[in-house]
Length: 107
Image 1 (cartoon, rainbow, N blue to C red):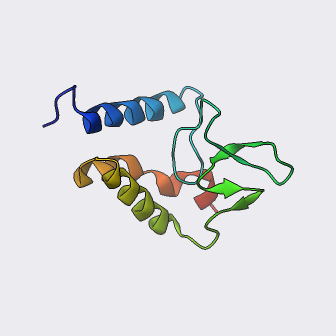
Image 2: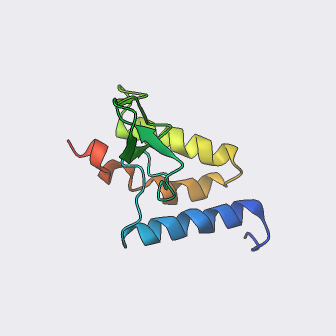
């Protein structure tokens, strides 16, 4: 088990808290789930304004950066990114299990 001083444990707690506060009004990317509440990770609309729904990794210039990816493909992409950041693979499922419920994937 991870101790509070370890990097992956701390990052997991930060993401978990962001997801918890999302229910109280803080926004997460509606494609990958990444927290975008601070405003420094927002993608851009075609007119150059910040997207209020999507992050810089998923959305640029009014278009999805990976237009053909599926919700399952996005889950795997996010899992791999979290592993590269030091998260244990078993924890990545906790952070990706709700991706298919985000706005981009509802249609």
